[in-house]
Image (cartoon, rainbow, N blue to C red; front, side, top):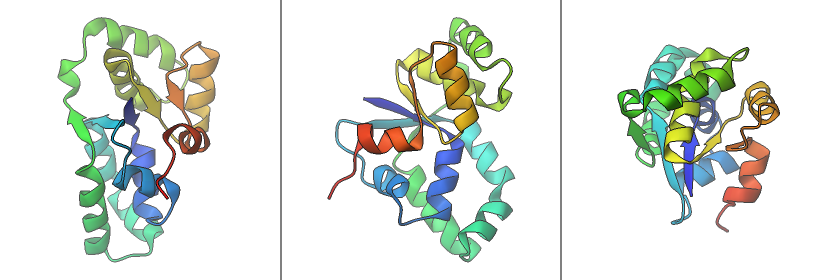
Amino acid sequence: MIIIVDTNILVSACILTNNKISEILLDPSPSLKLISCYYAFAELFKHQEKIVKLAKQPADQVSIILYTLLRQIEFYNESIIQEDYWAKADQLTAGVDAKDISFVALALQKAGTLWTGDKKLTNHLKAEGFNQVINTAESYEILGTRQ
């Protein structure tokens, strides 16, 4: 199963390192392929100070956590996404956060499932008939955790 990891999932895993999100990302099932867009890096750098503050950890510790998480994910340059998938993703994300277009386009191109903590985005995409999206609660059921 291909899972496209949205930036807010990565942020959550950095802030709360001992939760199920972190567990899934750090020890994914062998049947999972975790991927994301390079755009996630830009968003992580943009919100770096906020992440460190919310994590209540020193910046160097948050960097180590983030590095460990990022090693589990294969990142794709958005230039590999075909134009028709960009167009479809643009339609699907119209009226929501335009910053999520690359994650939706990658999910379409790779026939994967977008994992996002953005409830507004999840509800909007499902209302548009895009069922290749799961929220964090659904991820626990679908992706599971190792005991």
